[in-house]
Image (cartoon, rainbow, N blue to C red; front, top):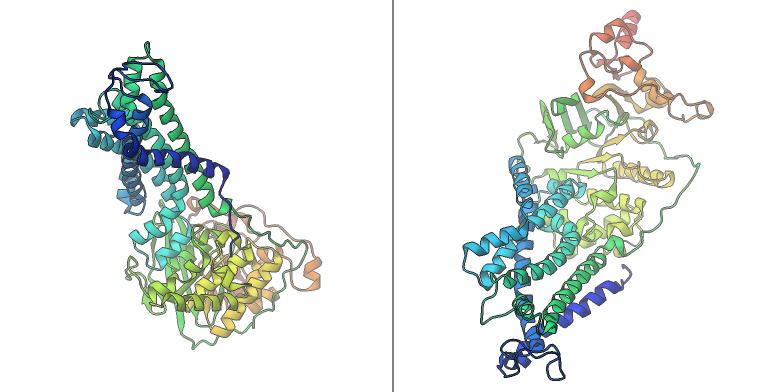
Length: 623
């Protein structure tokens, strides 16, 4: 269980101060209400034992009237703040989850409204309607809505791009569920701080409008009304204005301390130190290699992709990728950063960023045509496919316990009762070798080490018993000891469950240790497909694959002691890819034909395939 956290000192101070003001608001009208309205002959008296803050022009006790006015002032500020928070938050966050056109138009509208000072908006509204309690509360609430809308729009835009929101979309969560479960909880801390500031500002604004005669009207009174009366008599009884001014100051201070304290207390990542990761230096990554024999050709094809094209603003990111993955097969996608590996995997899972455009001749998982599937509603894709992302920290909602997130797919898609889902989740955590799984269910993601978070991510992906598991750089952020554990776990899942896997990595040694078949990607396309046996033996044909092997330490003693050969140059940017071979500027075998024509993927004698004019020429001569 998580250690119990003490309340921050600022929160305790703010609660005490603000609690006193609330208590006064409740009790003061009941105790001193009649006495505060009583007219006496003691007109404009200064401070005395009977009247600590003196009396006003009608002989009424200023201190008692200040205490009694607390209720109306706090209620008006609370109502105005609620109007601003509710409308502004729903507007700002809701726009983010709407369509592309609504997002753009909504964001511009919010920017326009923020440019107007809130007090000008409030003055305009109170000038249109009859001055009074209701009109001034609505005016202040509406005036501050754009401030909350701007903040929540910015925060929600950031949160909606997080991978745990992407996973929730994969699970078929609707916009309302995404908003209430994943977006709002993760922006609550800054919204809470702004709410406390908004409450204090509302008191000042309401008091200012009442001071100008546009707020509370007689016979009602608030601190602004009392402050106006005190300033009118400032030359006679200066102490008369001290009470309402001090009340406004202390209430604003208390609200600010409560907001900051609650933000610090409710934000779990600021309250508990995450466990330290074990560091291991100079150790080799040792994973029991999988069998080099790929699954038999008569096995069912779980995932089928044909001629995938993905572009961003017209620049191609993926160019004509075709791929089949059979049941029980582990296929690796390897290549440098920016080669299109993750984009291909996310396209296969239908988790591409909405700003990207894509097309494919075929896109199927477990027989489901994903080009025609309606992903706005829960589909079988959520149970046929599991995804393990590169950074498990960004895949878990930091505002929810691990157990709540693990059981979501079972409760949403399979209708499993809560207790049964928790038992299954604990069993999966134990299966992936997470220590103390019962306790981990009640922890936040940041309270787990990197390796434990990655195992928990794998357990969550396995809970639906998927036919295909997509692992996108699952070991990149881990040290070599934990890397080996994760790879062994993936190997165990494949052999015991027969789960098909697509493993994404930039490390050719990782894919050679785990996969049956490897596809090498460069500049958005597959340039070579080779069996893992040929890859380990160095029987590869494409110059890029040879360069990757030369830049990676080998398995045998000779290759481990041989100096590594770094790959010179850099991959082309998406806009730089033309009709020529994209690897030509870095290739030692470049020919004139390479500068004019992009090679196609052709079979080679070893049962693989390569897209290289030099390889094609060698094979032609050999024939």
